[in-house]
Image 1: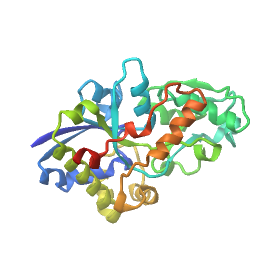
Image 2 (image 1 turned 60 degrees about the vertical axis):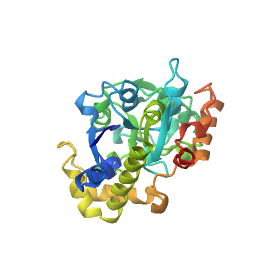
Image 3 (image 1 turned 90 degrees about the horizontal axis):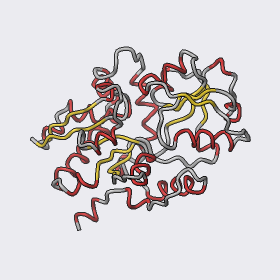
Image 4 (image 1 turned 120 degrees about the horizontal axis):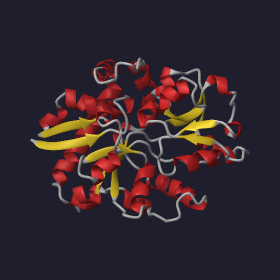
Length: 300
């Protein structure tokens, strides 16, 4: 068996359903793949998925586009490459608690934000506020990563960043702001990534079969909502009482065309990279095509 380690970007949730379905259905095993899924709760998010890959503690991981850019432009750069995207459109938003009296992004001035501590995150939030006519003067706090959402639910902080198809299903009553509505061309999240080094040292067939099998798991989930929801439910932390079926139904339109599930459009990456450069959030220019692993090119 070819042993593969996948580091999740969060505790098991709807964004990961295809991996768990493919594993439970035996799809990976059919391709001689022994997949180990690593949840961040195992180390209380001491290391991000990308860091796990860099340190050799994982082979693949899930992360947003920002991570690809950040790792490639940091002082000791480490090249990550995107293999597929889970969603074709941004399914995230900035959410605010009900008692904060925040009705639009500019109202976040002098309010609080619970940050995950990602490299570009805080600057993106400040730009969101400015794009709505505010000053970007927000008080940012850094609770433990796995506890960020709870701080907003318990009204310790006013706002944070969520996935609408997960936390948004749990609390539909909360007000939220999508970045695209405020001139921020946010990119893909999450992406399935690995390192350039791992790709060079691994049989192309194993990589291709892992990707194809993963796609098979997601497509099965889309076509078999009830069964797939029951499979995922076994892996969800007990304290998360979310309607998985509703979460999957909400997510399905974001998966895009199933014939091209996972396809990454370089122009979407380019727009986001250009926006980061234009707004001085990232000064180093990165070529979008350099962030994507082109299977067809490698085969030729």
